[in-house]
Image 1 (spheres, one colour):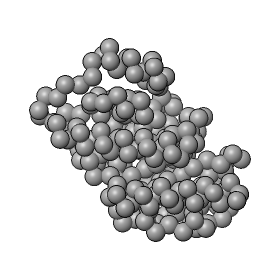
Image 2 (tube, helix red, strand yellow; image 1 turned 30 degrees about the vertical axis):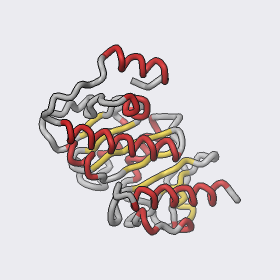
Image 3 (cartoon, rainbow, N blue to C red; image 1 turned 90 degrees about the vertical axis):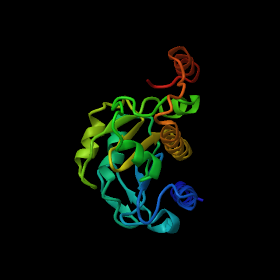
Image 4 (cartoon, one colour; image 1 turned 90 degrees about the horizontal axis):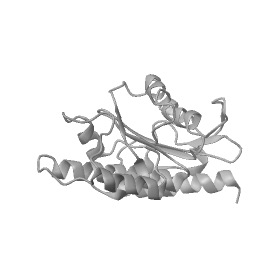
Length: 214
């Protein structure tokens, strides 16, 4: 099986899993993956994670030219921004997951570090999550905002919209995105209850042990 065929199948498998567990609904969300030749696979515009056809997943070159499959998602600039600014990015996942969106619209968030440090896994897989402002869906300014971070963040949360997470490969990006959603759920469940967060010493221990970008 060729690399492109195999990776298309993997995208379908991960997307369906997230859809079936309610992490995305309808035709929301998109996934991309970088192949060894530098070209990208990305879910098509208007597609549903629960019903993807591998052969219709968009295959585009480094210049954005469509090589095969359907037209790519209109949120391609979000994905391109991570590939451009983070050389080790192998995949990007964007969801409209419920708890993450809910967290993004609450007052009192720290835009530089929106996810409370309640577990070591949130730090390990996400580092600090940047809260970006609202943009119209498909607005290229979303990609420009990610580019403006100069590769310093692997995960952002778009206000009123959802998370966008980059990983070294498809599996890592999916798991990190799911970790963000679980972290947002914990934040909502404990908000106002004064939960004990990890101490600065504990956080630094995780950062050093797992070599986390911070």
